[in-house]
Length: 526
Image (cartoon, rainbow, N blue to C red; front, side, top):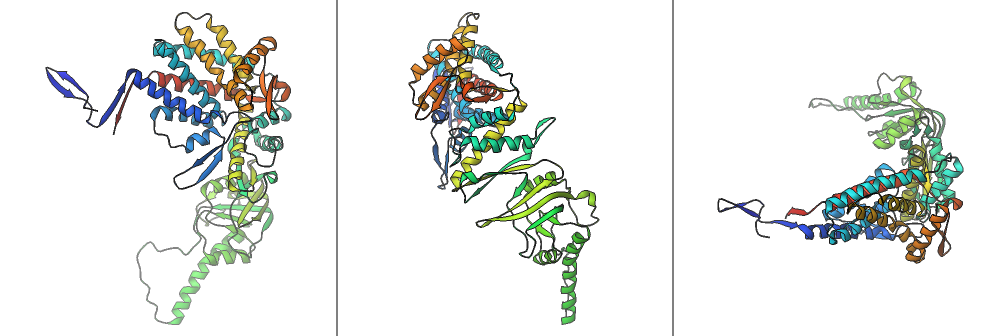
């Protein structure tokens, strides 16, 4: 495009560089809306218990198979700035509540589609934005009204997590069985101030079927003992976490040593061995049973530690070291000098197990935090990775339900109720803003329509039946059974979603859609 210019005093003044590109007015709005709709459409078919998977192949040939919206959008190579804003919707949803990323993205795309129709009818973007914001307030009111008053006992919490995992890649194990594992993990770290989510870790290990997935009351790290003669299991263990290197210390200055005979050489070797043995003696005298070292450990130190019956690991990652320290109550020490028993941690049991070529260390019964780990198993790496995503989402869902305001009926029932509430509220809104409010209500219908379509129902007939049943009974959703589905009360089938997931989806989708609609000028440099 030619240089953008304005005239001052009859002379042209160049504003943009020659290689800049500028799109304005309807062209800019149309381009941004189309990009947002395309991104939403890419994940729409993954929604619900009968949603499909996507295969994502990177430039290096790495393959990811998933129906997790956040993962799909994260792996896609997206360049359009408006499309990236929809990706940010999914990222925000994932960070805040851990689930509902596909719902938020699809809703944002539909809000843009409705806004496109309004723009074609000469409704001003500012009017659309104002209407959408008023509609979002009504939507949040509807969610509040739909939130169930029931206390979240274990049975209800299992139904919430099972709803989250139904339709996701869980291998040969049903979502119901995994739900028990998830609820056990969440309850284990629940305290007076809520769920300590950071104390739950999901670790994958391929080589067995998904049904071998288990809950470990402790921390698991992928590490093997320094020496083959070290014990593989220690009960009632005193634990030290060391952020040091247990090697020959290097001099702070450059120096040369002149060794002229064998005796001097032997003395030098003995001095080094004495220093290395000293590390092991120090740990042994301090009463340490198991040492986790973030730095490097000399092979000779490992041999000496084995002599003293101390189980030790080196090159521990910072995350694993932090988890072990929190679980056992140990302090991370930067030196082995002046060790104090108050700085050590404790665990009921520390054991090493071999899984094919990988060694895993289990730290169970830590004295400090009630840390737990879900060991997710899968016959292949793809199955294990997808199971890990499903478990993390389920844990986040359970946390959101307990900490952020209860649950609502799922299966599209909440969206039907939201749309109905917005339409009722739109009657009191005057002018063209009412059109935007009603368009927001129509956009909410995209969720039950998509659920119906993915379940094998006719989306239009299903929507009509949903509205009719909601009008009669106050709640109606799409229940997936066998190869198809039917309209019924999701509460009777134990299908629930956290209210926080619905709130965040409405807020983040509205924010992204209104931001894109307000853009009428795109300036980019090459």
